[in-house]
Length: 218
Image (cartoon, rainbow, N blue to C red; front, side, top):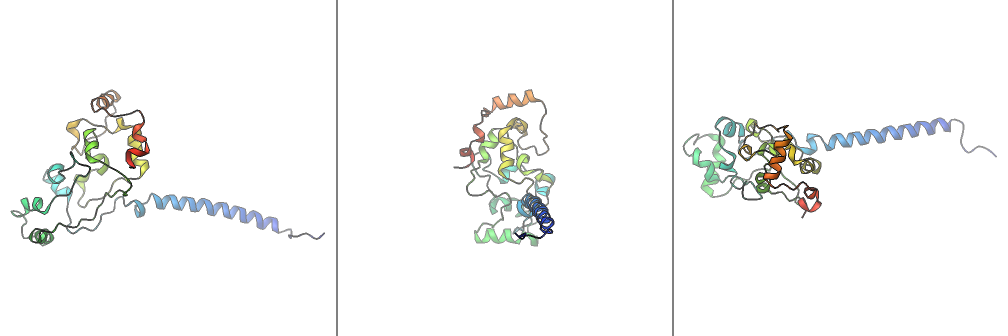
């Protein structure tokens, strides 16, 4: 009986197998790189805004407290954005004729809020409450990074579920004293005893409940 495949078919088969394997590995690597890249996560990407608001100037240089603008951060699921009235508290006196602040003045005159592009935008199926995180000793910079150094607001974290779970699985690595919540320069303390004391003081559940699906997906 004649052979169905010529002798060279073995070489061709090996080349195809190796080629498919290499292509599969390359596709997996490329997918991972894209998934974690700024193209997908928007980490380090500054969005276009109606006004080029600088946290570096307002927080870093002028020392304005986070809560002055984000009034809901301690009592609401949403930190909130400042109303135009809040902006004009200062800018009716300083830089009141600056061209870049024209949208703010127009917003006040028309009684129409500015339409900001959200930088930290979680999917609709994720429930996140700012107030409970603040109450349990999680500071602003844990999620938002050194925002006091940002001329334009950018993400410093992916906000992927893995990142959230890293904290929920080991909150003692991120928890801080109450008076350091708004200290953007604060660094995690390696003193495990102090961390355990803070866990007990804030009644943080470390039994595993924080990693239940229903904690964030409701």
